[in-house]
Image 1 (cartoon, rainbow, N blue to C red):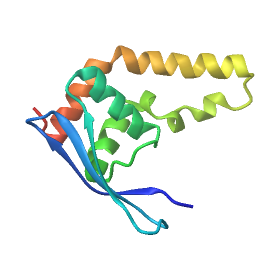
Image 2 (cartoon, rainbow, N blue to C red):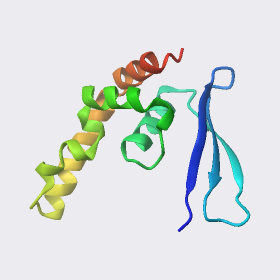
Image 3 (cartoon, helix red, strand yellow):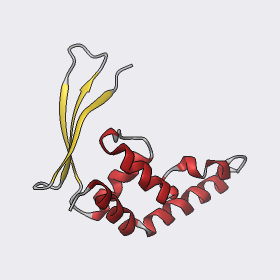
Image 4 (cartoon, rainbow, N blue to C red):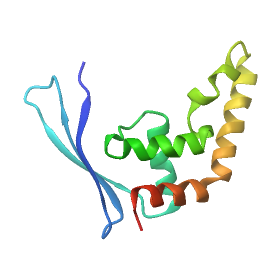
Length: 122
């Protein structure tokens, strides 16, 4: 199975992008890729944070800062409320997920501001 491994991640203040350098393992020839994710607005930064929270994106560079952020705002991580989801019907499951997503969305400005402060992004 092939997957991308992030070898370097940085915030570029001039372009307001999070830049990653990645390579594929188990692919011949091994390929290196450069990606730049636009995080110029609070909405886009919040989407980036949600990708990390959902474990859809690697965040090794700021692992400690993300741990602090997720302890402060547990509604971002499903594993913080997954015991509440056990044994529920699909409708109840969706309602609980929606409740926590809306809660996180209502705190978007605070979450983004706290994350920027933690990683020292202006």
